[in-house]
Image 1 (cartoon, rainbow, N blue to C red):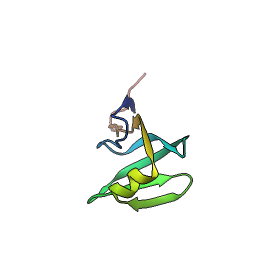
Image 2 (cartoon, helix red, strand yellow):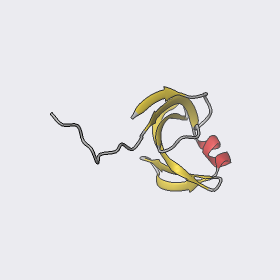
Image 3 (cartoon, rainbow, N blue to C red):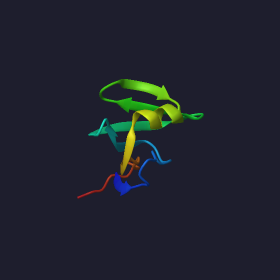
Image 4 (cartoon, helix red, strand yellow):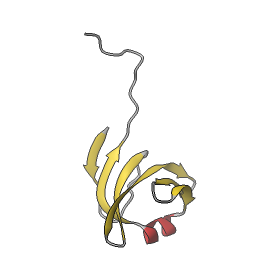
Length: 81
């Protein structure tokens, strides 16, 4: 897992990720799970999962620039004590 900041107003291009957004001036977080063609696969705790185009995504959410990326790790060789 990593935290970084991306340009405000952009969902970035590395997914899955949790993104800081605003809705009507109120802070909110959504997950973007990936892309399907031009559409984003979004999980919003207020709306549920959906596939949404880039224009609709930008109309609905204001992106704060905060991003928490989730990266898979290789658990085949877990650390030993």
